[in-house]
Length: 186
Image 1: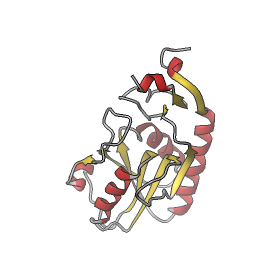
Image 2 (image 1 turned 60 degrees about the vertical axis):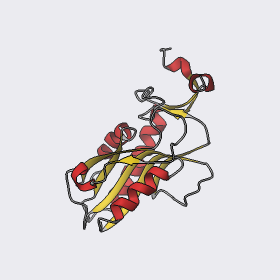
Image 3 (image 1 turned 135 degrees about the horizontal axis):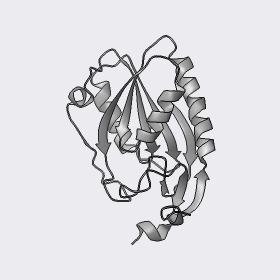
Image 4 (image 1 turned 180 degrees about the vertical axis):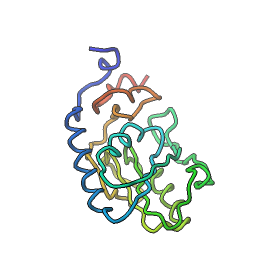
């Protein structure tokens, strides 16, 4: 057992479970966009691993871009403010108007980050806008927000792995696990 594995209370989703679910979602996106060329926008840093595997599971032409948006920083709770580049098209390096956009996120929690990003992108008049998330945390949200595509529902626990971090650590785990409370409550 590695040093980082020792900090995991239990594994929620194995590497194989993740791979199979990402393949299913990739197939659905390929079917839904078979006559389109979506622009996949990954929200950095958490979506990087998921986005890479998802792209390989999609068998239609698509383009990619990345956007940095965060409300957590190094904390375990949202700051209540989303930090992101105001000039989205400059940050993405491409235009949004008239494009079929799919936002790719690691985890839908408070929905603050995703709702803010979607609001800003809608202002740029895309042809369509959908959200794909690796995990949808089952929490009471003050914002009514649902992902169009999701791999897994998770309980209100502190999860890490497969790109999801705590204080920039644990992203490299090949599975998704629950972090032991004593690690983040120090």
